[in-house]
Image 1 (tube, helix red, strand yellow):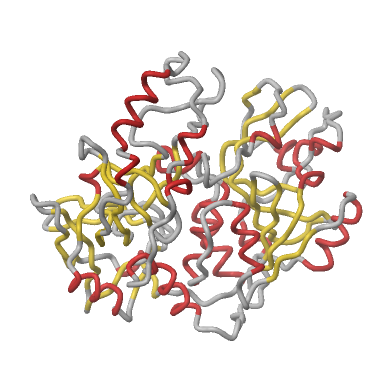
Image 2 (tube, rainbow, N blue to C red):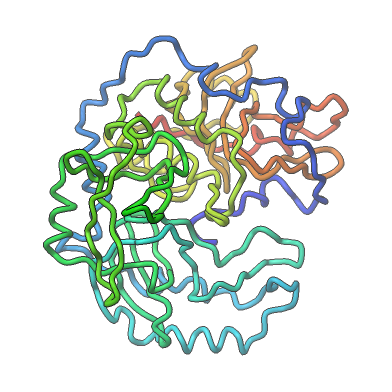
Length: 423
């Protein structure tokens, strides 16, 4: 998967997988799994000196700008660089399968269009136009390398291409590009796009997976990380008509389950949003509509109008290009890293990066840095143990096992390379 580096490179190291209770106190060091327990009682909001809402919306709608330039073909079709792997039956993917995919993609015609659209369904963005998975090894499940990201319903997109069958379209959003089913998008008129871009009032869900209805019929689930245009006492959603065009629809919503966008930027609010996602299952690339490490971080901070890229490396590097965040490279030794984090990292404002993984720093317990992260597993002395959920841990989670003889080189601490103080 291109947008997310492979987490297991850093934690599996070829070891066997051992299923464990993900609430195992030996792994999580008897740490409270509620982020609010680590937040400062000081509820004063931070002032970053910028209008974050305007900055966020500018990025959110950037693909609809007149000066938008479609990405180069090599940046779009990178999934064809690897033509090997295993399918859902643990069989080698045949060369003929790749040949058919390539023929169907009409590579020479890219980009064949540039049309404004919106997602009408929360969908999987695929690396190639197929629902078939590609696993690097026979035992690589659930790491489907053709799963690029989840994209929420009602996200603005631009459609750049379609495959030969017209079953799939190639889309670009503010944070990801890839293939989605053509019946999961709807083309939007310039008038409706302008109305969406000109909106001043937005609300955000304060629960995950709030069902939305129109005339008694289910529309979509509202998810943490989505924003909705507010129109009088209703919110705006989009439906697809029989011609594939977007219908702008105002629907009722439960105001107790939504908040004004953006939320005040303070530790307590960040912790409260993080706690909504606490314990949720891990989902590589958003598969099964779950989150991975970087979407967990991204969906938290979107509530505060802090726009972040989709993958972990881009998120930490984002601190190099914004006026309100700060990228910092860590020293090499573990002792120096700990001292550095204790000196510079700010709870609920700092993300910690290691190759393929990103974590939210939330403070210290007994002088040990504590992080909250959506994690697949951790290495132990006798294998790799699956957490597969949002967890609060130290930087050496497996070392907290009573029976552990795990070498220090296997820890998260050993691999962390940089931090980004987001604001």
